[in-house]
Image (cartoon, rainbow, N blue to C red):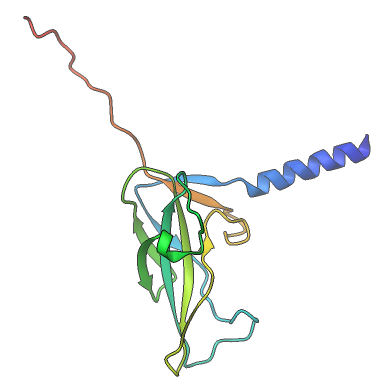
Length: 148
């Protein structure tokens, strides 16, 4: 019985950690931590230039490959660690960021896209999330008979 309780508790904790929050906003400022090391954990060189490409996609419709940027909606490239996103229409949006690294020789390399809904990519405290623009239409008012 104790083993069963431990397993059930573990499953509940794991499930709760993987749940996403829906952030209701028609526009949002996505923020992330600055990248200062390469994929092997080595510090970037002083001549390296780090830019960030920001993408979104319709999370409800899905996408065949969330790493294939040709299937995503491009938002902007920025030197900052935040970007305002204005959502083009009402749906639930996933937001992602990848690094564009330019070295002194003019070579450009890219990281994979980090996504807001992925536990490993999201902030440890805030957790994974997606965006959903606010509201639908309001109901009609002032109903009356036309008199005809």
